[in-house]
Amino acid sequence: MVAEDNGVQGGAGEALRTSGDVGAPRAPGAGEALRASSAPEVKVEDMFLAGPDGVQLAATLYQPPEGRSNGIALQINSSMATPRQYYRAFATHLAGRGFVVLTYDYRGIGGSTYDIPPPPARPAAVWASVDQTTAADYLARRFAGHTPMLLGHSMGGQILGLCRRAGEWRAFLLVATSHGWWKKWPVNRLRMWFRAFVLPPLLRVAPGLRRRLEEQSNMPYALAMEMSYYLRTRDFFVDERDRPVRPYNDAIRAPLRHIVLSDDDVVLPGSDIDVPYMYPNARFFRDFRTPASYGTDKVNHFGFFRRSMPVAAWDDAADWLLSHKPKG
Picture 1 (cartoon, one colour):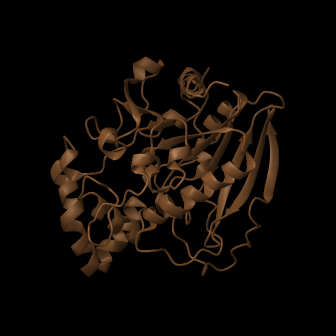
Picture 2: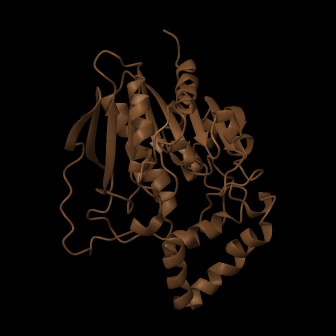
Picture 3: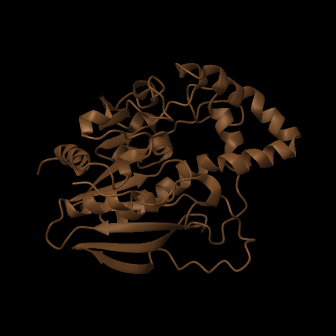
C-alpha cells in the first residue's frame, strides 16, 4: 500500500517570526482544541501547548479508535525547522495501530508563531530544553497511564539529552539523525569545516552574505550561527565557553533503534549519530537500511515519513515500539 507525498515541505523559511508580525491572530490557551477532525476512526485534534515562558506551541494530537488503544503515547520530535504537518500521514497510521501520537512545532516554526519573543541566540537549544519538554509534560499529564516513547527525526534525535523527562521514555526510534561534528563526516569534511570555522565570521561582517544565506538555505541567521558552534564539537550542544551541555544524556537507558538510510542525501553514510557517546546507557541498535529493503526505489532524508513510503516500513516501526512496551 502506497500513496503520494504529504505535500508539506520542511524548511526554516517559516522560522523565527516575532510578535512584531502585523495581524498575527491571537493564540488560544494551552490545550485548547482548534479543530477536531476524524480521519477514518482516528481522532485528530489541533491545539496549542503553553510553555513555561508563555510561548504557545502548535501541536496535533492523534488518538486511536475507541477501544483500540495499545497504551503507548508517542512524541515525535521533528527535523530542524520542519512543520509538524509533515508527519501527519505517519502519525495517523500509527494512531490507527493504537498509539496516541503528538506532533508539535518548535517555536518560530509552522504554527508556533503567535506572540513569541525575539529569537534567542541559540534557538535550537531552546527547542531542545523548553519546547521538547513542554510536549513531554503535556503527554505525561493527559495520558499518565500510558507508556511514553519518543521518535526523533534528524535533529529531533540529537536533542534528547536536554529534556528532563529523558529517563522516562521507554523506547526511542531515531530516523536519519546525524552526529554533527565536522571531523566525523567521511565525505564533505572540508565543507563542514568551512561551515564550522570560516562561515561564522564572514556572516558577522557581511550582511549581504547573511541575507543570501537566509534566502537560499531558508535558515535564519541565529540558527546558522548556532549550528556552526555545534559542528565544532563531538558533544553537539555546548555553552558559550564550549563546555558540553548534556544534563540528561546519561539518564537514557531504554532501547534505542536508529534507522540509517543508505541513500540519505543529508546524513551521509558514516556521519550518523554516535549513540554510544551521546547516549552511553541506551540499549542501542543501529539499523542500516537500503531503499530496496523497504521495497522502494528511494527514501532519502525525508522520505520515510512521506505517504509514498510503503506502509510495511511504518508497520515495522510500530511493531518495534510495541515490542518494547513493558509487560503487565
